[in-house]
Image (cartoon, rainbow, N blue to C red; front, side):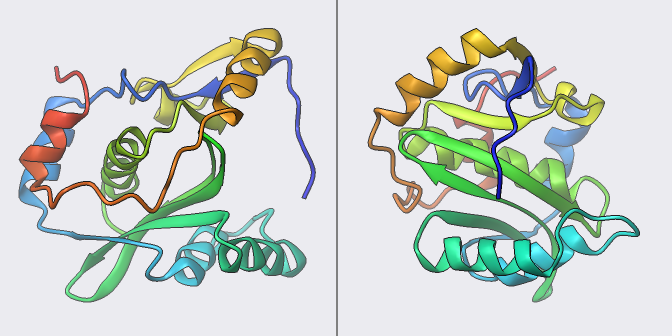
Amino acid sequence: LFWVDPRRRGILPLDRFHVSRSLRRRILRCGWEVRIDHDFEGVLDGCADRPETWINEPIRRLYLALHESGRAHSLELHEDGALIGGVYGVALGGAFFGESMFSRRADASKVALAWLVCRLAWGGFRLFDVQFLTPHLASLGAVEISRAEYRVRLDAALAVDADFGTQPPELSPSGMLQRITQTS
């Protein structure tokens, strides 16, 4: 692994996740099961299953080792027992570094991010680093900040003792939506 330090960095403020009306409907009606760290390897493989991927075998082994050490985590969505989407990343202090996500159903990656934002906020995280701003992430509330601002936020987040393993109470989809932010 290597550290990328761009002039502008994408972050997803945990208190500003944007839920559109259509995403809200999808979350309320989809019936997908949310699991944490249940199938990290499946999420990693799902993220790598595209024509061009940066997730080669050495990187795959590295993330699996990070997962085994308790640093890398996944949030998975299941439908009828099948993995249909998910997101994974690395947790350090109060910073979560989103690495990749995938979707085998419409909006599954968006639904996974909504549940992940809820979990990160509940666990005391202060920074959700999405690395680069994409139109997909911008539609959910992600923004770009300067390198200097990012470093200040990163330093503050690393000083926090957040816990990805902290379980929020059993939440219904509507309960999760109440915990995260804006709807339109």
